[in-house]
Length: 220
Image (cartoon, rainbow, N blue to C red; front, side):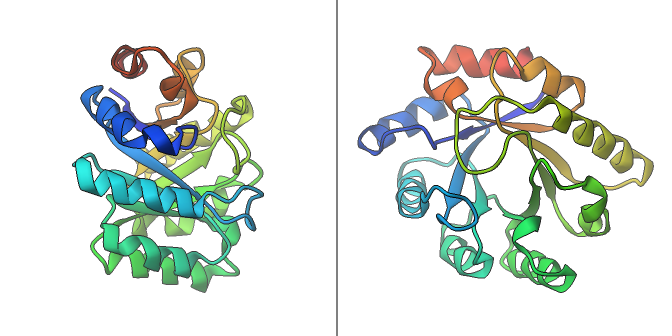
């Protein structure tokens, strides 16, 4: 059964505490925190996501799934370490070179936090193969990073399928997460290529019944 990481990006901050509670009751597996700096991507959600993460830690034990869409990766790793999220994922495209990628991998792991690498739709998966033995998750962006509510780019699903085969053939142990444009209409396509975790935002948060929507996404 696929796991669900619910993005809080489309939620209003006035209702965040109630929504956190409702999503926990609905059995989301993770809270997905979309941290954007207004530089790596156009939107800036950094202050709002920090507040949401603080609120989650106050009222919930659901694991936190931090996705950094930022230029200054080290600064934001430092910002989120005190929250002890389940994992911190940074973008391969934001790194200058291989040494920088490895530096961030080790920095996150040294804190006892799982580490993920995210790649955007135009990045070839072969570029990150060498890092797969050292990380816990690869996040495949199935839309362009930076805003919610986009339509899934179906060509990106081939990356997930190829990663699944590569993981099996090389006896590796990492999760494959898909993020972007996933809802009740598109989830079957993502499951077909065997993603382990799917990020769903407005497909859940704009639905009338969180519990039924999450149940349907998991079992679809």
